[in-house]
Each structure stands twice: as C-alpha cells, then as structure tokens.
Image (cartoon, rainbow, N blue to C red; front, side, top):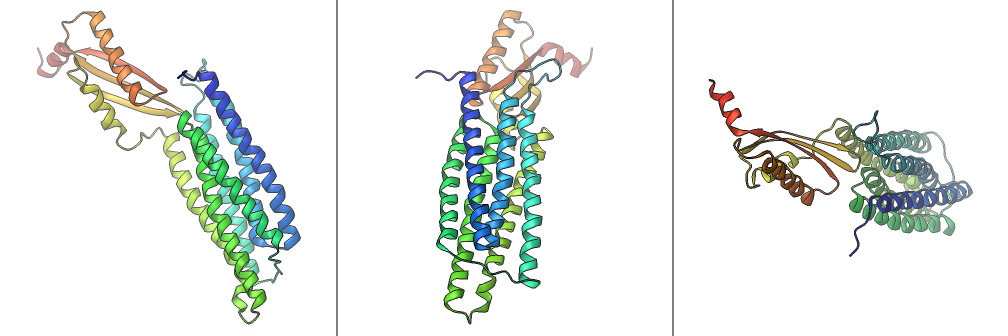
Length: 309
C-alpha cells in the first residue's frame, strides 16, 4: 500500500472542504426559496442556519488552505492554529443563529400569527437537506480522522447536529399538517414555532460543545490522559531512567511534544542520540503527524544536583 504524501493529504482536505462549501450553497438557496414560498419559520430558521453553515464552510476551507502552509520566521510552530480560530468563528456564528431563531419563534408564539403551508415542497426540501447533511457529515468525519484536522472535525460535528435539527423541523411541519386536518387542535398551529425553538436549543448545545473544545485548543490544553500516556510510553523505552517536563500542545492537525529524559551519563553521545530517535519513533507510532523534541540529561548529574556536593 503506497503511503500518502503530505501534499496529497492537503489536497484531499481541500477537496472535502470545498465539497462542503458547494453543498451549503445549494441547500441555503433551496431552503430560502421554499421557506419564503410556504411561510414556514422552521424552514427559514434552517435556511439561516444553512447560510451560516455556508459561511462556516468557507472559513473552514480557508483555514485548511492556510494551515497547510509550512512554518516560517513568524510562525515557528506552523499555521495550524488557524483551524482552531475557524472553529471559534463557527461557534460565534451558531450563537448568532440562536438569537435570531429564538426571537422569531417567541414573536410568532405570542405576538403575531403567520400562516404556514405544510406543503409537499416543504417536506421535500427538509428530506433533501437531511440526505445531503448525512453524506457530507460522513465525508468530513472520514477526512478529519485521516488527517487529524480539527477544522474538518468541527464541521462534521456541526452538520451532524443539522441532521437532528432538520428532523425537528420535519416534525413541526407534520404537526402543522395534522392541525390542518383537525382545526380544533389549536396548539398544533403553533407547532412550527415550537420546532424552531427546538432547532435553537440544538444549536445552543452544539455551540457550547464547540466553544469548550475550541478554547481548550487555543489555550494549549492537553487532551485528558495524554500527558500520562506519553510519560509512561517514554519511560518504557530501554535506556530511559526517568522523564519529566513533558509538554504537549496542538497546532491544528499537528501535535508538538517536548520531553526531558534522564539516561546513563556514562554512555556515548551517539548512543544517547540513538535513544532519542527510538523515543521519537515510539511516540510517532502512537501519534502520527507529531513533532517530538527530546532533551537528554545525564542521570549522574541529576543525582548530584539532588544530593548536593
């Protein structure tokens, strides 16, 4: 099996991100048209959501494009943090969507009455939306796993929630239709607005999850348990007496690890250097696309520092 080169990985990430952009453009246009034609707030809410999805998809594409650039004199760790910034931007867009949806839904529930047409076209556009979101969510998830891309992973998570919100809108349209058949069930006439509130709650939930992960990445928080696993892995290598000052930080899809190891101070420099390569290979076998720096310290010097002269 031929190994995939770095350039091929970047091209695949860009292709997946661009496909997501094109799908978002098509869905947004379709939902706006059907939402205006039927007067459905649920569909218009989904259209607004899709419009922000489109903006987020464009930002994700640009983030993937920039994050693939190599390190330079100003960005010594590369440009991977751009992916984390794109996820933060996506979170803010989602929260903006929630504000608009909740405002409009409350307005329709308590202030004004808007006739909603639960037509076949309304149901069709939501079903098409679900099918498209299922496919692009799977595509983005696959690419995110293969390339360890946080930007694509955030997009995939976003579109998975779109599937559930679209199902909520479908339910609202179905209840409106039932209300047309049974006029005495007055509450069902407001089902579309309730469905819009359901969409907003889903979006708020995913926004909070994305915000937490994005802020953690921007603050260089190490994934839970990773520090302990890396420390144990290093200490298991033959020739390593102990290790300390293990530092971990993410920069987009790349992971940077620094570690200090105590080794036999009487061994040759060549042997100590070979040990660092063994440690780096062991870490990369567990965590591909990782930049590892190992600082070797002689055990005898460390012992003297602890016990004194």
